[in-house]
Length: 339
Image (cartoon, rainbow, N blue to C red; front, side, top):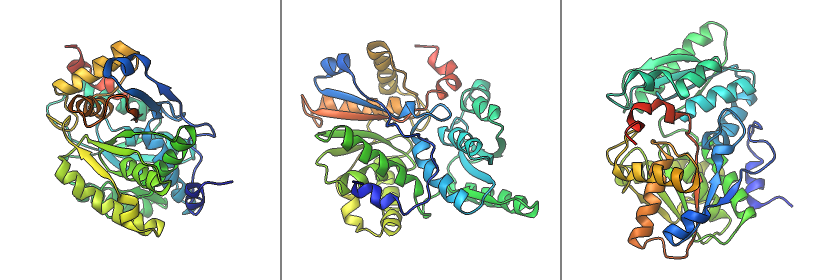
């Protein structure tokens, strides 16, 4: 019998990018002992398409909508080493579409490797077209740039589909993490804490909404990877507003228990501080699992901070979502060489 989440999601067009199998749920035995908690990793880095990651779940609904509208080209904006744009290029290839990737200069003072390897190289192999946007904190301007390019494509007889960077649009990506919540609870229901990155907001809002609809008692901890907790809280409020309209649900119901921390954000988006370095090396050297400097190492650093402060209780059953990003490690080779 379909779950409540499955019934909700059946109303939306969806491209099959994940395959039929759930991503692995893995207990981290040595880190559980070291941190004094029952720690599990939801391995969304092992989703099947294009080096995986959380964006594959989100793109199922964006590409589903694009296919439904007859699009032949996907346009999207992200940072130079964005996992989203690389994943969008892979999803477009799977669906027989062209991808236009607009790269922002969001991280200052990076070396040539950052601009040519990792996700950039993979997107080139996938046949994506790269264009540039010179500003890193101008989401509306970046979206305007995509629409200008889309107008050029329309004039050429193409059918473009824009995946917006700014808030204020239907958050179809959040639907992918409502599905992830359904998957997680089907695997194991009695979580105390769920830890996830919060950046664009789609993964965080979808996961929290899904768990609330499923009446999970777990605390969802959003770990800031791009902006301060106050600014992220404002952003999520807008995303939840639009998600509630999309789902035709009460906003207070889906947004309940919204917990945000920016303790691991310093020194900012795409930069590694002391706590991020500690988390990245601890996961690698204790469990043999790679995290990336931009998202997952910050998330694990945030988890460690919550354990040390007592916010996550000793012995708690905790799951952290590994949202991928491994290719970005190669773009940060110079930064990581010091390790």
